[in-house]
Structure formats: structure tokens, C-alpha cells
Image 1 (cartoon, one colour):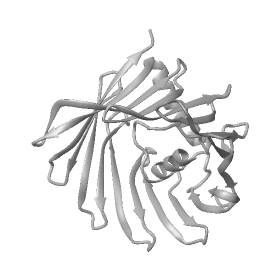
Image 2: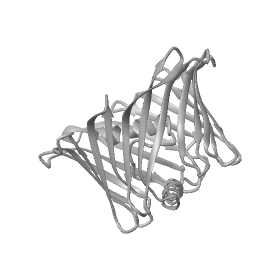
Image 3: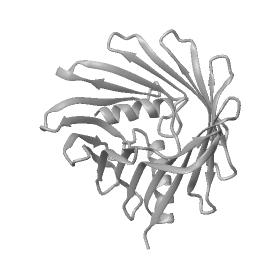
Amino acid sequence: MRKIMLFVVLFFILTTIILAHEEPTKTLKERQEKVKRKTAIFIAKVKTSTSWEYEIISGKASEKKWKILHQEYDKTGNLTGVSTYKNDSLVERAEYTYNANHDMMTDIDFTPHGIILEKNVYTFDKQGRVLSGECFNGRNIMTERFVNKFNRTNNTIEFIKYGKNNSLDYTILYKYPNDFDKFEYNEAIKKNAQGEQLQKIEKKISPAKLLTEKKVFGKDDQGTYSFEFKYNAKKDIQEIIKKNKNGSVVWKEEYLYQQNGNLYETQKTDAQGNLISVVKYTYEFYK
């Protein structure tokens, strides 16, 4: 469950266009967004997507590149496999299975040699909200688990993570402005087993229901950094700007798309406009 827990942390802080890992949906709103992404992949007939990072020399991208991520999709648009690379060498692979309603049932991580590292198994309600998850190691021994507690009176969902010996690890309380099946959460607080705040997220949603800002606070509730999101006419992410607590820019990331809507390239620059990284995406398609 280390990958799912990592994803929870990443999703908690920042959701990007290309997800390195699939995740189970906890609300009908999240499920609708997932179906929307899945449908777009199905319509485009995407079979695989590969991410390539380019070497930066003197502020420009050279022709030297290396593979960092490879994603595989079935013909319905479900993500079925993800392989991560470092220096063009396979580091880890994940494979996913789904039920008839396209809810993710298992998530299995493998070493580069095909040995199982861990297996995550999820349970859903009839409408597709994930209720719980269990993590098993390569010897099929459960090592971690989580449960989601839904509170419609308070419009909250509490993610509760348990570690070894079923001991409480941490919790994340997601707060919604109204019905969690219809809205994005606008605040989330992560606490340790002792109830001490580890992190807090505050989100701003536009009238068009687009995320425009996400602030991240640390243990002392002081603003540590934030993300600003800008969109194109198709409501695709066009730019993400990271700022530190005094509002100055840390970096900017621009997203470029092909005419068919597929993400083609991301470019990250520092506060002075110097190029930091370039990632390009290539695709294979079903006939």
C-alpha cells in the first residue's frame, strides 16, 4: 500500500493531468471525473502513453532523452499497467484489474524482475465509492489497510489509515461545501495518530467548477506554499504555478496539447523564466 499511500499524498497535494498511478474513487463526483477521462481515452483509442524527459543544456532542451513512464490502456479506456523508469531502466511496474462496473479491484506492484512487491485489494459500495482497502506483501500477509467513513450530516469523508498490528497511522478529513457526491472538497486536514495536524489543504473552486488554487499548510498552520491553476478554452490545464508562502513564484509548468486533445509536452521554468525541465509524450493507438 506504499504506492497507494504515496498516491493519496500526491493527490492530496496536487492532481496533475497525467496520473502516474490509478486510484479508487471515494465519491460519485470523483467517479464522474474518472469516467470522463476514461471516455476521452476510449474515444482517442489510446493504447499506450510514454513520457520522455529531455536533457536541459544552457536553458534549452537537447535531443538527448530518457523514458520515465509508460502507461497501458485497454480498449475501454481503463488504465491496466504502469511502468516507471530511471535512466531508461525499469524501476517498478503496477498492474490493475477492474470489476464489471469498471471499479478498480486490485492494484499489484512488481519488481523489474516480475516479483510481487505488494497487492492492494479494494471494496466498493454499489455506486462505486471505495469503502476500504487492504495491502498484502509478496508473501500474501496483510501489512496495511484503510477505511473511508462517510458523514452526510457534516458533508465530510474521513480516510483512516492503519499500519502494522492494526495500529492507527494517520487520518485525513475531507470537508465539502455541500453534498460530497456533487462537489469537490474545499478543505482537507491530515493528522497523526495523536491527533496532531500534519498538513492542511485549502482549495478554491471557480463558478465553472474548476480548481483555481490549492494552498498547503504545515504542522504549525502557517502557509508553506500554494499552487495556482489556469485552463484553456477546453478546460484542460494550461499552466500550474507554484508559489511560496510570501506569494513569490517558485516555478511554472506549461501544458501543451495536440489538436486531438492529447497532452504533447510539459515545460517547467523557474521564477526567472529559465527552463528547468521538458517532458514530451508519445502515444500508440488501437486500430
